[in-house]
Image 1 (cartoon, rainbow, N blue to C red):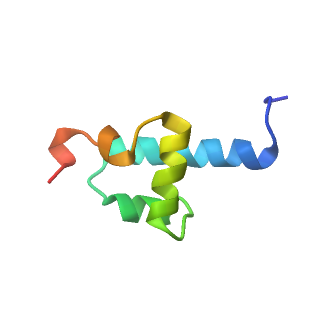
Image 2 (image 1 turned 90 degrees about the vertical axis):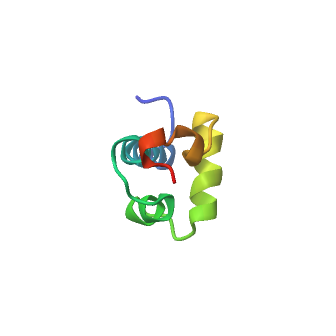
Length: 66
């Protein structure tokens, strides 16, 4: 129905939630990774970049950087 497996669909939904948190909250990237179910922030960043073509830091608005 969705053109992907259940696991792929769940991962896509988690990454979309992460993108929203990256853009709308001041949580650290590692905190976001843990919040959406990744045990390793490095694995999260890799998955995020593979899915969106940008790293979480690249998607972070300037107001939350620093």
